Length: 97
Ligand SMILES: [Zn+2]
View 1: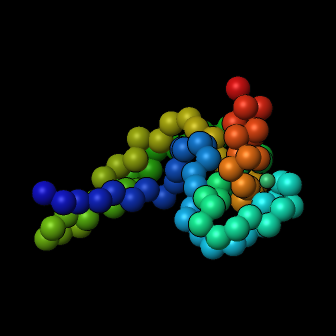
View 2: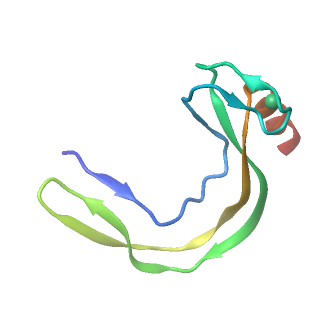
View 3: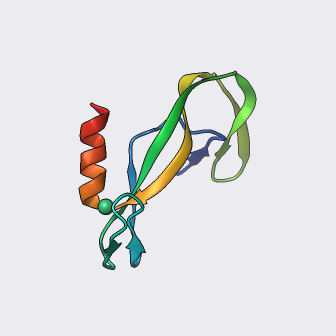
């Protein structure tokens, strides 16, 4: 049974990486070669309370689409995000702890 969910907001703040071509690290300004993972670093986050949103989440099932309530809650929202190389991403994670 395959279905997927999508939400209008994300509570996740952990850096995620993107498979991309060549890019410039926005922290150390070095150009990173292609096939190197680019990390998205939330350089500025703020706490946020999410209100409950009825019917906020769309659940796509095989033959129909359903809307389910989002319970809301507390999380963080990303104010500003940069692309970083793995080295900078590791340093950033270190600083977060
Ligand atoms: Zn870097």
